[in-house]
Amino acid sequence: MRVVKVLLALVVLAVVVSAGGYRYWESRLEAPIAVDESTLYEIPPGAGYNRVIADLASRGIIENAWAFRLLTRLDSDAVPQLRIGEYMLEPGMSGRELIALLGSDNVVTYPLTIPEGWTFRQMRELLASAPKLEQLTAEMSDEEVMAELGREGEHPEGWFFPDTYRYRKGVSDLDILRQSHQRMENQLEEVWAKRDDDLPIDSAYEALIMASLIERETGTPEERRKIAGVFKRRMESGMRLQTDPTVIYGMGERYDGRITYADLREETPYNTYVIDGMPPTPIAMPGRASLEAAVNPSPGDTLYFVSKGDGSHHFSRTLREHNAAVRRYILNR
Image (tube, rainbow, N blue to C red; front, top):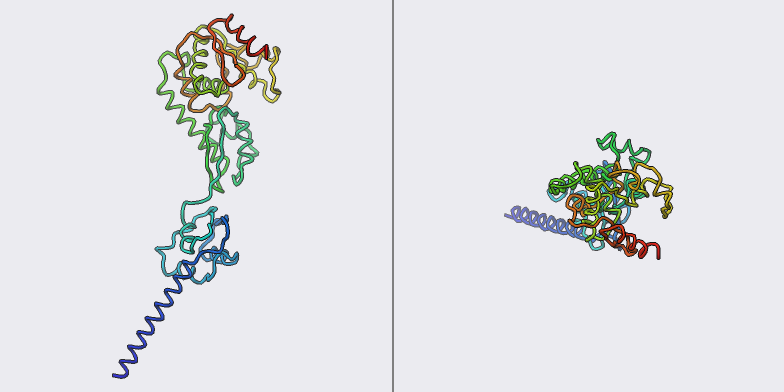
């Protein structure tokens, strides 16, 4: 009987000790990590829990590394697979929350905004300066970039959709280019399917060219379809488009902010003062609104427009009215 009591006492003691040990283990995991402010932490490729736990402990972010190692061995359901990337550790976060974060998709991302109306050259310059973005195209020509995207022989201008893209460390400039190119293809396909029946253009690519002209002519939303209407009527009547942004694009890096009469008369493939119809390629990256305007121009009878100097334009039906507007808004200024 005495032996039974002793054994029972030992069992009770073991249970108590085990329960106490479990509660202590749990308290170590639930304790807040040691960061006083938001702290960036990166899991490199190939890292496992032992390496990460040791690193966190060496930095003083966690204490009692044994508790975390024990967790990875005894409670695999509570331990997600580590994911490569950067994570933001926050003050007050518990050890368990830390482990959950490092196995989640909540990696740190960075924004990259491609403005509407930018050229491909400007886009490449922005990509080259983007933080944490892997640079794969730095030594590539535009032609080589397009070949990497499966578009060998195509001119790159206009084929990338202007928008804000988010990326994580390890993503490459080529990944952003591929995503942006696919977005533009999808957007163009959607708007071309909803085009007017009486357009003077015959293909989605011509709509992309027209949209780029509209994008470079105005940033005023309510004017895009009106400018598209002017371009449509000019093409239908055999008039030249005579839009300054094509002159600027044809000048390339020679453009210094001014256009002279000599520039207007210079024969380049893009100068719509000397060529008939549209230029051979887009001259910028148009946004969705300009794409829609290109295929759904406003009806009317205006054939001319001139900048008022405030971002908007004066539209005219006759050359006489247009010349008066030029004197009022351009020459007098």
